[in-house]
Length: 134
DNA sequence: AACCTGACGTCGG
DNA sequence: TCCGACGCCAGGT
Image 1 (cartoon, rainbow, N blue to C red):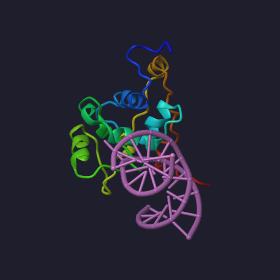
Image 2 (tube, chains in turn brown, cyan, purple; image 1 turned 90 degrees about the horizontal axis):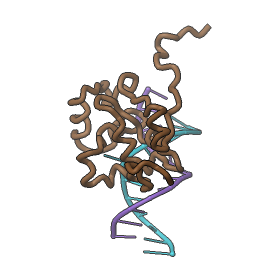
Image 3 (tube, rainbow, N blue to C red; image 1 turned 180 degrees about the horizontal axis):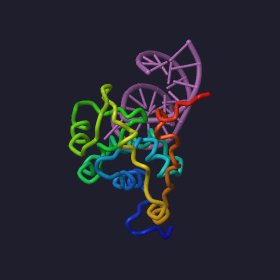
């Protein structure tokens, strides 16, 4: 109760609301979105929400939601094309360069204002630079 | 009401 | 490092 008029109680609508926060040129994983939505939402649920976009596909940047390995889950070249148009780079294996495009999550202020959770900080972004074992 | 399927993720070989 | 099996939850039939 007492949520902003722009907020909704419908699980799918909340998922879409978070997806809309992902900026052009960046990507988020299904798990990321689920963690931000919280309330028992899991990656699978986000996948279902994306599959059920329908007419909302026009306002929700669905192409920016990918799987954990940086791979594209939809069939056909469409999603990758849209991402490349935004400047998202892919590696030789067809995976998005997560180190350069992975969204850090919504700001704490926005999350709190809409009743969402912020993403936990990701550790060791550049492991290649710290190979010194011993 | 039960079963099948899927725009995922984790674990083990 | 890569591939397959299993577990999850929600919709559609």
